[in-house]
Length: 509
Image (cartoon, rainbow, N blue to C red; front, side, top):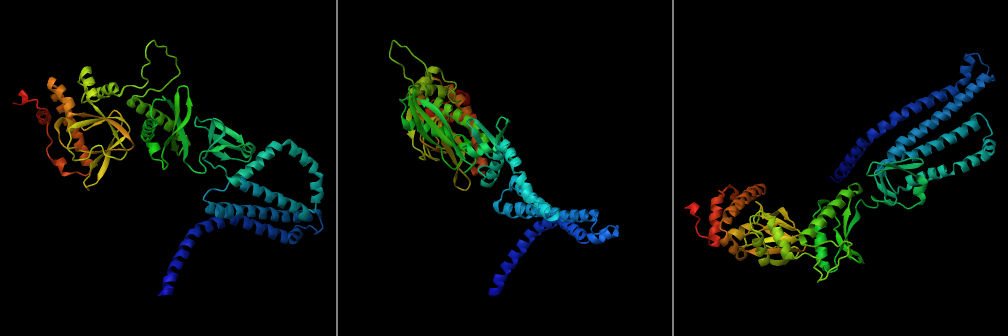
């Protein structure tokens, strides 16, 4: 039983190895069959040349017979050289080396070895078959070789640099390399003398191998695919460092390509200058070809976060004032009424009503990972996001909470609790540190009592949002609540009026 247990896996492994090697052996035999047959044919002709010459009536010492024999012997050497080159190509370059390394062997290496084989075989044929003084020939042509080598020294340097590049492989086909500042190209081909690249704009750049072998260059794909890019921005000295870090980190994490990287982004100070502190928002990129689009997305996200946070970017200018200098940063409360005006819940409020609501709102700092509200909690307030990113989690059919949305600066949540007092329908968790403003029932009640017509508009908005929530719940697993009848706008209006003590609507009587 022990022998069977050992022999069966061994037999299976041999069977798998045999099935894997059969196609390779078939290719090897097919490609070497021609050279082998030609070698045998040339050897047969060379070995039986005396009989062939006698058949045609040539004496063994006749010039035609001697030249024919030498040509036949030379043909044997040349065909054997061809067979050796074919054997190296199939068995070594595309066989052992390619399977072990997992990458194609450079064409330059195969061509170089083939050239050496042809030179050596040619010298052997001249010396052994034709009995020529090869050493004297090489000595005589040494001066000519030196002259030619001096004239072609740059080309020869590029040739040997190409050989070294193919052996050391500092870059490969498909890598992005920067050969000079601002010129970055994707490697298309590594030839005998040059390396061909193409830029992101589709412009071809040909670089001599000698330059790449003697000058430093950047490779954006090695030693690892991901590399770090950064966006610089100057902000006022009055801004606290932790607030700047919170805003810039949230802006970078809001870009999907940045958030998907294994290495997390960070924020550093680059310099202090006349206009403020120069900050670096640093993040990781895995594809240099997509770098411009990712950088643009990060810059746009940074501008959006700064806008909602009420922060102005300093710029070179000179101000002359006869009075006290104004604040560089926008007032959050004056900025909050503009954010509220863009929300459909408060779109019908007058400017003065928006200002009153913004002044009554309370600022809340929300640490990362600590829920602002939880599903099922009682509440009677709404939250407006001004800084950071927050995740929206809802219960699924299996009892766990799944993310269904994301809150960015300018978004608001908690409208159902604010207008009807019903429990929270979702858990809101900050991804990083965040800042929100809370508007309670007591803040909104004076406005609704002065303008009771707003209850009609708010009830319609709640009914529309209820339909969207119902669709989300179906996606999360079809909970029993989704099959129940949903309140109509009329019912929502009565709930709002009852919660704020506005009295019965005469239209519902």
